Amino acid sequence: MGNFSPIVQQQRAGEIPEGVCLVVGSCARADWPSNDEGDLLYSFTPIEGNLQYFWEAFPSNSKGGPSDLRTTYMFSYLDTNMQRPSLAEFYDAYLNWLPEYQGKRIDEIEPIRALFAAFPTYKNSPLETKFDRLLMFGDSSGIQSPLSFGGFGAMLRHLKRIDLAVSEALKYDALDKGSLKLMSPYMPSLSVTWLFQRAMSVPAARKVADPDIINKVLRSNFTSMDRMGDSTLRPFLQDVIQFPGLTRAIAGMMTDPVLVWKILNHVGLVALLDWWVHYVALAIYDVRHSFLAATESSSLSLTFEQKRLRESLKFGSGRDYYEE
Image (cartoon, rainbow, N blue to C red; front, side, top):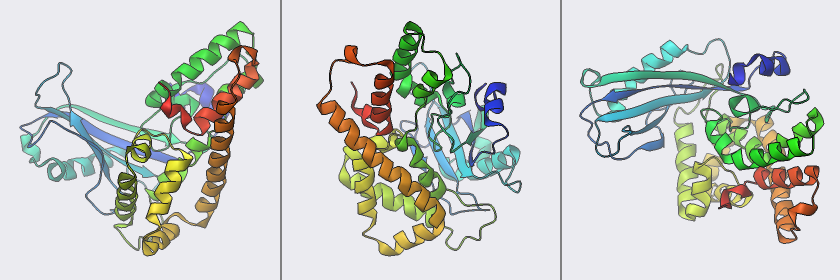
């Protein structure tokens, strides 16, 4: 039941999410201008009603080969202010902008199925269990980035780690909440993404000075990462943040001081200081993981706790990305 599980709600004790990702979309049939490629993150409109619309699209055909089916999503990052639109109103905006995005009139598109969801995101993540013999998985674990549409992809990334940890927890009877908490450690590679979520959203009550600021930030960021090559760009696109790549991307954006100043005004000093703590932690985790990897001893000689520590450093620094 994910974030809405009664057990998770009991643990969070009425905690209000710091953010929400609204997602709507459809799988539809049409004579598309092009249906052999997709978009991962696309934006073509300025901020509208304190919302920045992002798009994702890809061909839909389970049998392979050419298809006239295409899936499109529109999503936005927002706070939990009651002034925010409902999912129905958000879907109206999707239908309004879909023809311009895909180059087809709305009456030329045959809907097959509609998709819609709201994903709450909490800074208190990953969620540590408060109970013996209980472990969180998927959305309920809070292990996903606040930029993602949920925890399934994140769980695939962590599946090998968790599988090994659960196996050893059963073997050594390490099923108390103190031991199980070690499987949901603090990960600076996850926490630093909150600044990205903040940079890609607008508080409901804020007056927007530059409606195109988010598009400018993304254009500058992706241009910078693209110049640095796949070693910087690919991990980011797969939601894995690493200290070297993040530092290079930031340095690349510093070539436009006017934009940097606008970004600082947009995200705010409090959010920036909070991010700085996690950025420094990311650097520390990266150094510690590199040191332990260089002096790694046989895992047979490590305790349950020591193995979980090494895993937290590897995943907390994003270095698991290079695993075969």
